[in-house]
Length: 269
Image (cartoon, rainbow, N blue to C red; front, side, top):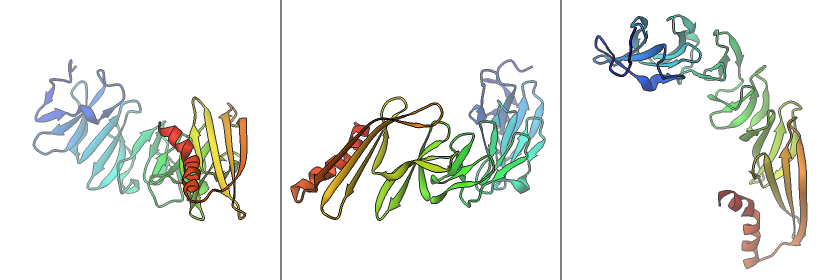
């Protein structure tokens, strides 16, 4: 058995520890790279070749005994026995498969750890994981269920942050202004309407939502809502402050602008 990976050299192949994810104190497997060819493979700690050193790239996920592999701009998932789990012909054409939260993520596909297709999402963009229940695209556009592939929100909505288990802060542009709200993925409705100028985190599970609306008569209405998220994904309002004032002109417009930006300034300070 190999006693130390640090100084181990395997017949012209070097250990590539940065291509290993998981428990790396003394892992059962290690990625190797040909010193001359530059190709990747996998060996076990007894020096046995599990995956031949013929691939353009290889990342081993030790916690799952799976490897994400690239060859000729195509991608696949192998197990550490060298068996194909997700074949190349079904693989992500634009990047390596990722393994997160016991799921395998392709371009717009999700597999279980046995390589069974769990869901294919109705998008042509690469997907990103929000949680083990929900996903969005790489540009944070749209919201999708990993349970059945349903599009919960269209790509007109931008996902800002998932809070709780089933609540998501989202934004959308209305008449040139970006508005924010909170969407409940279970009930499929907005528990905080898309009418806020900002929603910012304020301490642990505390949030402040602020809105400003200029009415036709020149009056400005502001609403500042302080709330928390309960364990059952409800919004619990702690305080609501409503104000109505005459919209200023000239230098006063700058004051109004500062008031509108104050939640954001607070967030960055």
